[in-house]
Length: 141
Image 1 (cartoon, rainbow, N blue to C red):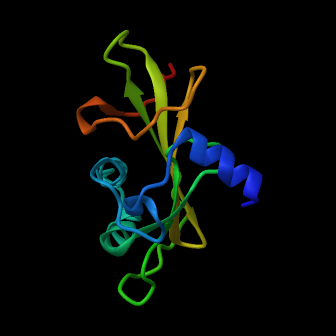
Image 2 (cartoon, rainbow, N blue to C red; image 1 turned 120 degrees about the vertical axis):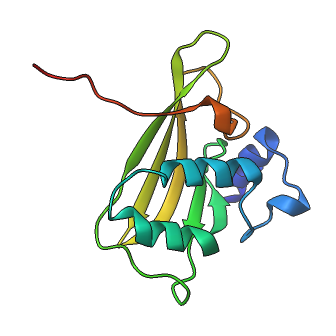
């Protein structure tokens, strides 16, 4: 990340000692990851094991709280398939889905926990666990 980009991000989210990387996930980051991995699918088990040792290795450069992930490859198995997961987050103020959580893997390893939003400014942190809901698609006839 360039000095200018890092300086811009730090204006949005001042860096504290607890935010230096690599680091453990915060409680909200952990809750979001655990929620996304609670899906009932056979391919998720390896990712759940990876999640036990996962560390945050950096923020998204736009200033949002999305984080890059790295699991300990000596303590966890590689997942066999790609595993994008999407979850909507209801805004308690209006009941609308204004945030989405996405979990990405790269070559079988947890790689990025993303928060996407519809608003003028990015959220400052991951949502509280009680606002998470699984993403569903409309049923077709």
